[in-house]
Image (cartoon, rainbow over all chains, first blue to last red; front, side, top):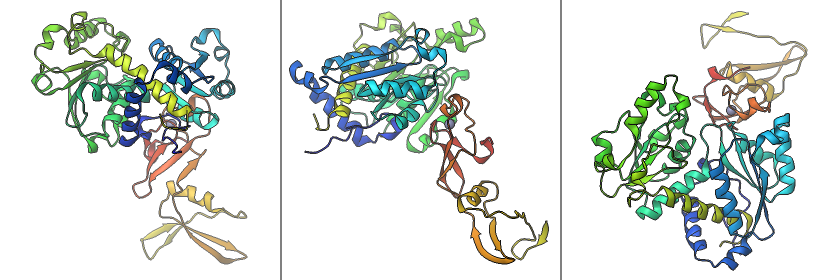
Length: 312
Length: 106
Ligand SMILES: [Zn+2]
């Protein structure tokens, strides 16, 4: 029997996964969707997924929990810091060690850079990074790429515009590194104060063409195949008026949508606040809810592959 | 000490007495003085001449300058990876930040 390439593997950074890995994962995700409930149930039966969420993220946690349940496994974990020992000062090391004793696989979300890498070193069971520090969220990048392949039937050759807070948007960095495995062009659009951190995209500009803009203009409208919108948070602005101004200039509504190519696909990692207005939701261009659904499928496949030696 | 040199005009010499330096100890000097040579003197005779080499990893000497790094926040021993020995480009093993020598904190 051939061992599948994800078996027992940690998912710490998107940088650890090559194009072949991603394509393998996407193929297995497709295949798994076709299994009947009974077959799926066997993949995670009697296995426990532990989760430690040092930062609140209902979406990511729910997605992983749904994914684990769909392959017949169960979940235990801590997502409310206030009521746990972590608040009392227990080290990350100790908390990870204990959770490692109870679970077969662990999802960790933590505010510090490198926390998952560290956790992976000290735990016996595989770790999946559910978002760490300022720039790693590998499974979000994987599901974003999977969504693109499902909607556009390819990734190569696409022009992808990423809009919003690019400085603090954690998912952006992982997505860019994921995209760098493909032949794509990137257009980044953000307010001047929220532009991408150059030190965090080391080497990326050698791999793909990246255009940086501070406003939506014809370059964006005429060229983009995908518009990936992220939230601009109020907390990032010291001046509330400045925030209102910026917010208005970057909001996507059905009017501005008309200026884009008719087949543009609009993505968003969710939760969305008002950066995409609700009148866009019913348009065929809006794929952000499908994206969340693809996310669950992809995470089910990822969990199944890490937990089972045999390929799906 | 400042003495004449054949290769350069002058060279500096630092003398460490009554202590044998292991290779991984002298390699640590490479970050400050990448072209230094180590002469081990035993019983008044030159016992060994060593060219300094950058190691693949530097463990525990420096702190990662990224304040949001897990090694800082959780007080873990730092591991700095040397990804380019010629240009001396370094990378924190944990947070992945690319670093130059000047950014490292003792
Ligand atoms: Zn670091």
